[in-house]
Image (cartoon, rainbow, N blue to C red; front, side, top):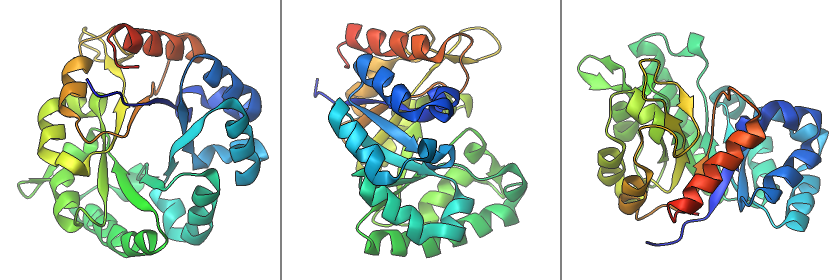
Length: 253
């Protein structure tokens, strides 16, 4: 199977990152991750992009991509793009639409329209725009899912889709089918597992019901597998350790 590098989403260790960004990066590198997916809203511990990049270079880490809320893109896109470049990545991911901005079909039509204005600016700046979904993008309005409205509203050369295998399954999708359907429009994947009980809660990779070898086998265009656990019942670093240990056991890291 083709080797795909594995990164950790900084949201997994957000509280630690807020307290000491450099020490958090050191601990992530020590676990064996090859990169981290930055989260712009965490603030980078007050460090400049160049300081973050220098720290990561010293640790042998790469920025897989940069996660940015839609509201931040709408109000501060030029600064976001400059920061993303300085981090050393070309991948800018729209990470989150606030709940009050996505209550109905009209709201989602406005989101699509906003992304249609953002996407050309991102492309002209030499970056690649991705959309990170949750389960609510599989809600249906007028017979069409939000996910499909996004796909049809922006062309593949304007916006790629970052598939999160947990949220796809939570949204009653089959992750392997979704990935195959997207083809080269899916290049960054979020890996998190799901418990087998009725809660269908977040779990460390390899401890739940999601078939990661099957997913990896169809993700032929993947450039990064990015481990994320939105909420951890224990120590987030131990969660991250379990996930990468299990990926190594599967031959995926």
